[in-house]
Length: 495
Image 1 (cartoon, rainbow, N blue to C red):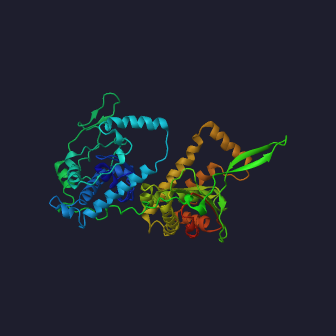
Image 2 (image 1 turned 45 degrees about the vertical axis):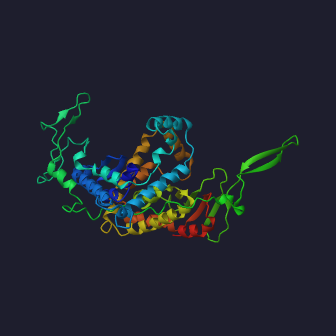
């Protein structure tokens, strides 16, 4: 219970706001919560130079979590009452319990061998209560404020072991000479550095400065205030509550397969069973086709939506294709903070740019999937508008654009290092397909900065042209429990 509660707040696989806050400063690549008392942060070179600030922010956020608990002197009535601390803690606890229960109730079948080996390992942990091996890891009991308080008190700087691994530590690092940080000295020739016996790696062990530890422990206690930009996450609006199955309704009964009878050469009738194709739903919007397939086999309240936004403008030139791919990367990077709650609640999405247009895939619990689609389509539009404002008005967005350009250039160059058969297939496409651009054309577009550089404003204009210009929309919806909301889906796709 406490493990889930603590990891739910600060880091849990790129959760905002702490990760978003430090990521906007381009100092992190990734952050994760490996266990209750272990935090791992991957830093960029800039972030490595500012690692002390990152550690400081982490302890500030831990203090912020502690403030969500009622004070130790609070009465039992106050702990269960409507004060400004307890409801937040109780609601977070209830969210984790609901998510765990939903994931357990609608878990999908996996590999039998992996399941058996996993259950065997759990028997060592639950040997006294083997009946809990299935539900044990996600079982959430009633919240005990006293135990929670004691465990969170252990998250103190005096109990911290900080390990810093930097392969570039041998290089000269510019630091402020007035900075008295305990990590300022990075000179590997210093006598405090030792050499590891087997691999020759240099390392050193150093006590944390007591003054630094005292500073970390003072946040939120009245001595030092917590950065106002750090906030606890909002309550999750994507957690489903309606798990009814529309396939059980008389009006929605459908067969998963149809039988076709044909006659072969000797006049014998042959019955062939084929899957029932998705139905084409009637609608009056031009350029939009929507297919629907009701699932009656797996019987889970989930929906899968596949959307193909077809546009002839995406692949009309190497530059257009490159700019649309950059928009895709910026969009997916930016959406992390927008749809984290949805992913946590079991709703997932994917946006991919292809030569024929943009493909959007969504999956999750039916009740909340249209909400995710609304967030996704709204952000696709607002992101393009923000990119049009330029680097001066949107510096954080410009940093995302630069990072996307670097990543795309590296990925494009790495195509040349593919396996031989992949290279042979690509060369065959160049020979036989009518219109296909050579990867060198993409590389030239990204590397010729001096002549005709790619800009964030141009990227937004091209993306808008491809998304909102001559576009044909095709949807395929599987097991959509609220098919009466199809008009809402159409309106969301019309941007």
